[in-house]
Amino acid sequence: MRVLAVDTATPYLVLGTQEAELALRAERRHNELLVPTLMRFLERAGLALRELEGVVAGQGPGSYTGLRVGLAFAQGLARALGVPFVGVDTLAGVAARFGGRVAVGLTARNQLVYAALYDGEERVRGPEKLATEAFFSLAPCRALDAPPSGRALARLGSRALAQGARGFHAHYL
Image (tube, rainbow, N blue to C red; front, top):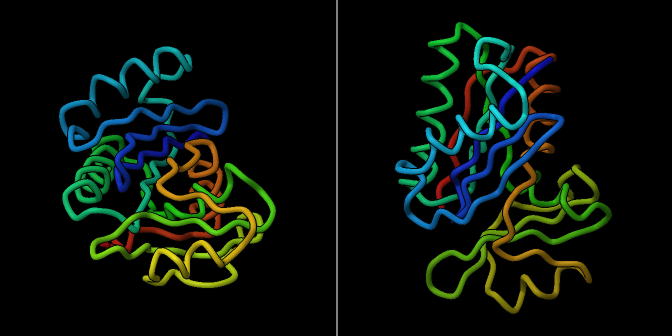
């Protein structure tokens, strides 16, 4: 299934298919950068919008505005193309970059980290808000504020769509 993954839950704009991915540090400019970056990404990947069979969006955790930009865009694109749409776990996409047992976290307010522990793509613990020190004691391998893998998000979304999943549940920091 040819799916496009979009994630704007972190400071990165992440795009992905099962064959290609892009992570661009966007800070708070996701809305401004999303469409032109997507068009260049698809052109380089040799993929036309009309070839998409599904759209996937990272559903967080993430900032309210950043998360809404990606979810609204992905859902609107899916509706315009007449293809299914599903949200997937942003932290699982980060964990997939590392493999094995890894603690994945995003900086939250008040010196807290929104974190989860993964073994591969399977969540073992969390997500939960932890003090920074507690996050660093979770596992020997840790990823704090790393971008998710666009390929992994596309793969996770493709599986979810094949199993009939639709829609999303946003997880805000």
